[in-house]
Length: 270
Image (cartoon, rainbow, N blue to C red; front, side, top):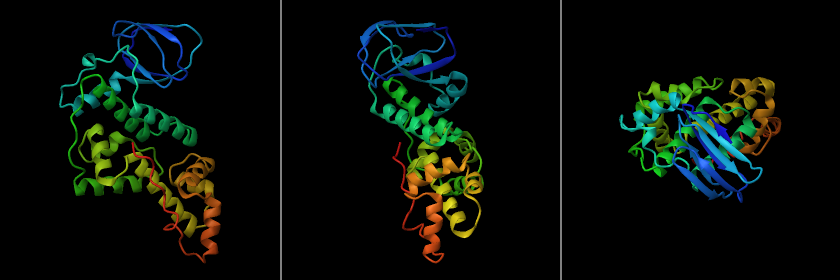
């Protein structure tokens, strides 16, 4: 397996394990036995090569330097460099990155292509862990959002539920870097921004199901999902009912809201 030198960091996950792997991914020659679920990182601007003894399965995420270096540099107060990471070309275990991978792929299965908010937030979390493992930890963030910033951010999220709002936009609105914003948001509100957006969407979907006769397809678009099937999957996961069953249950209660009894369950914290 080989690729030319590209301005990207590529994170690979070994999905099978049990095969000897050798090559150079930018950190010098290596020759190791792969372990299922472990990771390795290919350096940017380096023509990488790797040899596997047998057919293998890998999962990869690509981080273009042009999109990510400025985010990390801002998070590190101008002191970040991809060249300083001591992680390229070695196999390592990371429960945190493994959980992020698993969650990212599960959400993509449920909701389709990841939203800009999900992709950016997941990228920030994974790259922060890579920096820590590579000996260049990013500064920790102390404290949450200022009250005005929290209010402005939630107002923007509520008014743009139907849009694919990005982490960068939310961060810019409150004059923070995306990396710092994501951490401070979670500290203030107890959930990552994308998980909180899902909660807001479920609350709005419940309101529309309770108070209107709009078709479920229309409600899905109103709250930012591409189809009624996607809304149904997300709604069932969080409310433990399908949208149609929820609407019938509300009407069986004589129009009284049952949202309190079926409050959206918080997602697993990242």
